[in-house]
Length: 244
Picture 1 (spheres, rainbow, N blue to C red):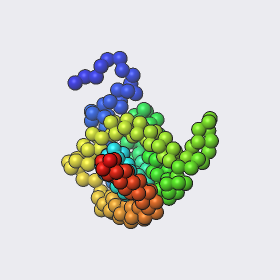
Picture 2 (cartoon, rainbow, N blue to C red):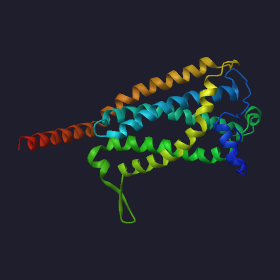
Picture 3 (cartoon, helix red, strand yellow):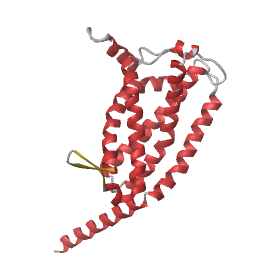
């Protein structure tokens, strides 16, 4: 199906990338696969993050009731987010330092390059502020850190603000990258060296996530205990109303 005429070239390139009509020809080089190996690792990490982020979004339907899951999933997101940032950062570094293989592969479309920093900053920002909010606890997490234009800004406020940035930037990123990532990990017609290395990275990331989750869950126990107490009080209040 042809795209509407008159669309700006940068938009056309993004749309064609999103629908799988245009993609980079990543050279296969070295023991790790070079750009092709990097692209596969990034795609696997991206798909894992997508599943975890969707699950995390579900907890927003009832944060108080699902606070334990919210914290656990947030912790599980940290290692793969850092790993994906590292894999994309490595590709950017190699491209801009003139590595022949990565220059041959070329950069992503211009609009996706412009969106990239927002995705990274939004992701790392929402995860970092989430950790801070958890460690501070209910009371300190809601206390004002700074006063800006008549508004008190708390750690929780920063967490919510970075979430909005992340949601917009990552939503656009997913629309453009989801199908290419699925097609890439499902592509088996050519062998790319470095499968064992990529598997080690993925397993190490999963192990790190599994270790981090209970640590952060224990560190944010005040949120869980306070929420349970609040729900218990609400339940008791409801019982009293019924008896009246």
